[in-house]
Structures are given as structure tokens and as C-alpha cells.
Length: 68
Image (cartoon, rainbow, N blue to C red):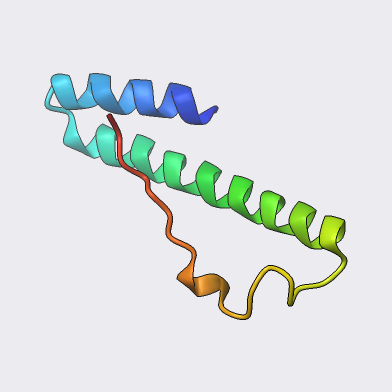
């Protein structure tokens, strides 16, 4: 399921006070976002040809999963 659909269904679940379903959809959002971030990181590494050009501490990269 796409990130947008998961967010949409999470919002619907929240409105219907189906919090277990909302949690399930938000976990899917996080999973899809992490996969996309990993793919982007790999693409950057391939493009630059070096891990060191990205930075020595990838854990410092902030991720905002806020839902507007």
C-alpha cells in the first residue's frame, strides 16, 4: 500500500475511533518511509561513489513522520 493511502486510512480509522487500525496503518507508513529512505541513501552512495561524502554519522539524519 502506498504511503498516501496508509495515511488516509489511518486518519479515517482515527475519526472512527478505531485506534488499533490507526496504529496498523501508521506502522505501514513508517515501514514504507524507511524503505524509501534506504533506497535514497543507496542511490546517493552510488552517485557519489563514496560513503564518506554522505557523512560519517547517518544516525544524525532527522526523519519527520508527522501527519498534517
